[in-house]
Amino acid sequence: MMFERFFPDEWVESAYSIDYEGYFEAGYRGLIFDIDNTLVPHGADADERAIALFDRLKKIGFDICLLSNNKKPRVERFNKDVNVNYIFKAGKPYSKNYYVATMMTRTSVQSTLVIGDQLFTDIYGGKLAGIHTILVNPIDKKEEFQVRLKRFLERPVMKFYKHSLKEKVAEMPKNRKPESKAARMRRRKEKHFSVAERIARIDRLFNSRYT
Image (cartoon, rainbow, N blue to C red; front, side, top):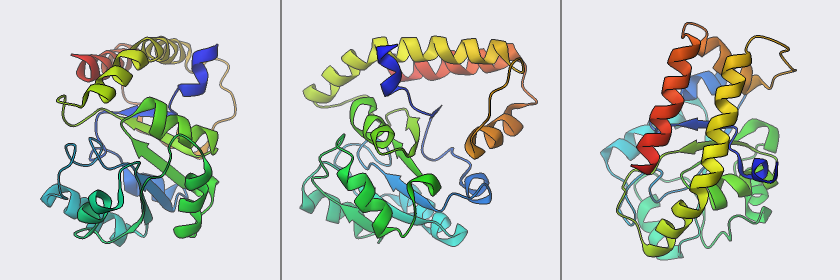
């Protein structure tokens, strides 16, 4: 299916709800974050929640890089309160600067996670680079015209992705294929939820993103 190239490896509500400790335990060491509408509303400085998250991630042991298509002043303004590596005017979804980010964090593509809210830039770029991707829903629904256009274009892709997720949930645990360390961790975390509960979660994510 042509849309599969855009599918994230995982989809969660927020960058603030991710089990980072679990990922570290699973062997991940690097984090690549988008900024706008992933960590804060578009154009906002790092707030208390973002600062607390980055403090927590550093204590866990992660090396972090901000990867943004924005210009240097905006990225530097956000970074002054979190103090991590950063790349501005990154040219996402081209994969070049994803590799640069892994070099800056002294990690590999296999031990790094990409977290972002945009399917056609953050996630597609991470997939092109071979990095595990986590799509989050945008923090603020008030977005610039070009971003709203991307949301309109991504919606049919996400409908196919939602359908594929439901199929996978319904098939578990039949014919289980070899899993990545992230997939094994996710499966352990979700094993106490019924199929109906997992499908309802997928619907909630979709509705939260597009309504």
